[in-house]
Length: 308
Image 1 (tube, helix red, strand yellow):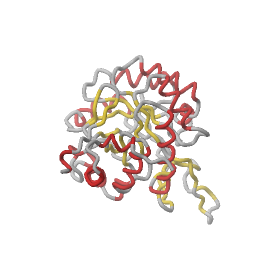
Image 2 (spheres, helix red, strand yellow; image 1 turned 45 degrees about the vertical axis):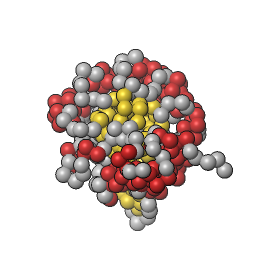
Image 3 (cartoon, helix red, strand yellow; image 1 turned 120 degrees about the vertical axis):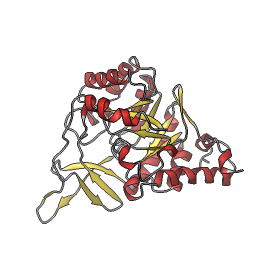
Image 4 (spheres, helix red, strand yellow; image 1 turned 90 degrees about the vertical axis):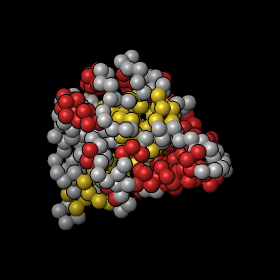
């Protein structure tokens, strides 16, 4: 079976992504930063840098510290704000050959809604990923994502504003992520993406102080992959909507683990810092795995895990 014969598209709500490999919000800028490093037409989707109503300067520096098997970041949702996103970033994104999924963040329910309302007239926006899971902001973000009632209420409100695919981005920093996923589904989400970063901390033992001014940050990279796979597996068994898996994908084999765990698609984040072409290599590796194992459709993988 030639690789070209593998069906790679992914249904999310009423639309389809051309393939299951996207690039995670906050790790790929607004797309143009990578255009000379990777063939953007090979991506299934670009999940944009977070968008808030007003511009955000983000947290104090340093914002990133390396850890064994990953990085700890405390960016603080730094972004240009909705006005400049529409006037400066969206014209470029509208010309890209892949799906553009706007990552929406806010400090209040009203702010989330206002950002979606501003983006609704913009034809270039394929869908929305709602960031209810960022651990690096003082207001909003993680607070929304840890309360099932708030997740369902926010999802329901945003659902009423758009017919585009609506994806809720879940935090791993909860007792039971399946409960949060079911709340998103009950509110009308078309999919959930999991996981965002894990809360972590690094201390400078000479200064006897946290390295990050915000004290804690979000841990990403290969160290968190087993957690991401396990939570994807748990969520996929708890909901009927698609799950988009992420966390520590550094190879096609890593991505296949997520697909076997029940993900319909994946996102690559920290790995692109190491190798900007990683998303294309992962896509090619997934297709090769399907060919080698006799799968004609990538979506068959999520139904094939053998229970032990």
